[in-house]
Image (cartoon, rainbow, N blue to C red):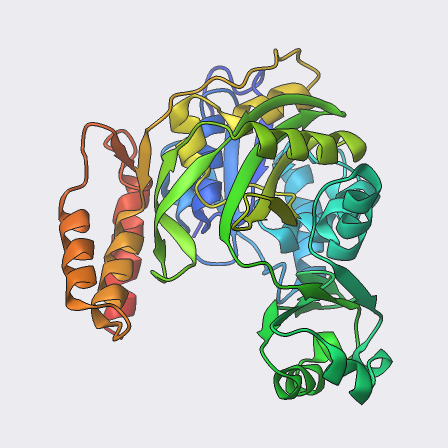
Amino acid sequence: MNTLYQQSEDSETLPRVLVLDANQRSALAVTRSLGAIAAVLTADATTAALAGCSRHSRLYLQSPSPAKQPQHFLQWLRATIQAHSIDWVFPVTEISSQLILLEPDALGDAKLPFAPLAQVMTLADKWELVQLAARVGVPHPKSTHYMHAGELSAADILDMDYPIVLKPCQSRRWLGDQWLNTAVHIAHSPADLTDLLQEKIYLRDYPFMLQEFIPGHGAGIFALYDNGEPITFFAHRRLREKPPRGGVSVLSESAPLDPRLQSIAKKLLDAASWHGVAMIEFRVAADGTPYLMEVNTRFWGSLQLAIDAGVDFPALLLQISRGASVPQTTTYRIGGRLRWLLGDIDSLYLALRDPGFSRWDKLQRLMAFLTPHPSNTRHEINRWSDLGPARFELKTYLKDLLR
């Protein structure tokens, strides 16, 4: 559902930005960030969307789905950029960003604030990432590359050390006219591995890795680079997730930068001559060694936390992409929290129903939910200055609940 575009007095001087994937929480954070310095339009494949309901979105447009209708989406994008004189396109999902990089003619006169496709794939393709890590001395799990499952013999499978991780080289694989979604799996036995290799088309017919399983906990570093030069880094802690045993963050807290993780992230991104944003994920083993897991070359779900802490990644990215000089900084507010309220409610519900949690665990989880630390916690969606997204999310949530 389109809304009328209200042209302000300064619309002629502001850059015009199209934010795609508007149902993503990261798209809402981008829209709110850029609303003060750009004329922001938003788009997604639904009749209305989260970021499209923000007062910072001057126009919401319904687009074809880049996942289900890629060619129609590219045609729509080309026409929309021309019709609305778009200067910059900000996709926030892997599918939309990589599709545009694969088909750059769809941009017309607009630009992406990202590195070129070949450079992106040095980090986004997991085998290329492992090779880069090996060249620059970044710790990573032992990995073996296979072009397809047929390269593994029955004897090879029996000789593996279990558990073992099966990791497709690409999270989303473009087949020329459609996307193939993939997933990471853990095989605990030769039978598990055999079944997965036979059942999953993205393992059976396409490149993947078998990777050493690293016990430990996850950690990450968020970064912004300007044509090979680091601009800023950020870190946070996940306090609660959905599902509660591991998933997307529903409560997170800005945290000090770990010097070792920052050093490794910098070494990797320097070697890639990176430009744009990146999230570098690690698995920290019991002995404290951080092993590189993957790099996401797009905005992340809890982006609003970094913005609230004083690291406005979308605004900084737009500024450097337009050629502005931005000083390097690693200072930000520590201890601020971001809560996705409806996600936190779902997480609590799942924890209370989980038979693996003891009564004491469930009571602790309930008490933590009921003590939200209002002095240092902000809501990700619910903002008094911008209530449209909260109303939209609640309406959608209740509608899904009553189905």
